[in-house]
Length: 392
Image (cartoon, rainbow, N blue to C red; front, side, top):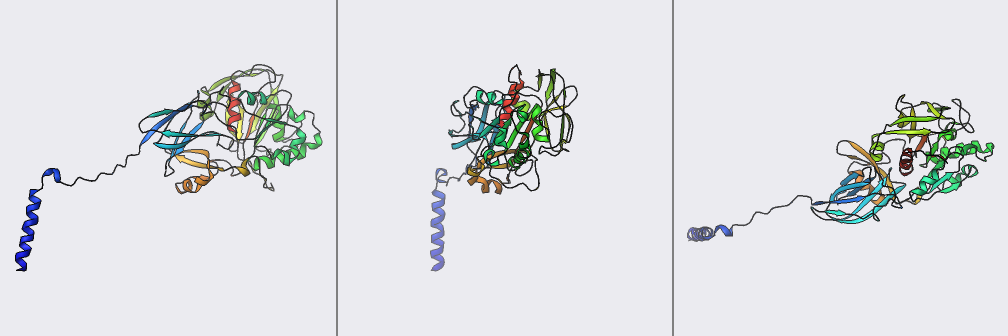
């Protein structure tokens, strides 16, 4: 009886299966793993909208913290591929610690959304100071970009509590010996070492190499008394003669940001500092003489010294951003600033905390043998100095 019942059930099931039409066959379940992406376009400009900013980093992250990254061209234009949805677009120069903007944007699948110029202006995060000089007015370039800088004095440089308020200090040519009591030099040199070792950045031009290597005004010898950069790392002598010096931009990123790789630099004063010796492992050459390969513009973030006290500098203690190094496809490394809350997730994907190169806590030191003359025409060397301002 059981066999008959089982046979009957089997026949019924078989008949039901044979009566099902093709249209009744269960549909296959398909999972769409395609990431939906769109594009964001825009033009990066300075705060007042007058200067297009080349070489700016533009990036965002998807929900798994994968980075989408591009840079602006020499005219400030960019197109960023980004995951569809509501995104925060980051716009930065340098490592993003001093100049950065965040833009909320909705990315549409397979569409390009354009940001307006009010959204893509590069904001000043840094507190900037400058020391008045005899032959330079870098503050004029800062102001033409729409940014703010506070004038300080050499007496202020001798007070660490004063300069620790700032992120960037510009040292105009001639300021080392501009209404200054020379007894302040040891304190100034010690404070600049503390400032840079704890993440502050400085720019010095021409005769103000004396802040770095010693001396009171211009330098005519190596290994002078004073300064804070080791004598083995740099020597500059006041042996340059006036005239036009053809120069080559030696850094690919700088050349791309500027849109050119050659420049005629007008040394229109009676003399100028020539870099006669530098440590190539310590300094990066950004601009050099075309004929001789002599360095004209150098930078480093390798400064270290023993016995330097840990001192909070500028906005860093209050910042909710952290500098990280991320490796892009092609083994390209970039230093950017990201919201601190994202750091653990990015580290889990291979990012490291801190810049991609240089000493962990060091700020930048930029030095140029040319500068922004208080009077006179500096030609397209001016846009190089704009790059310096935005990338410190």
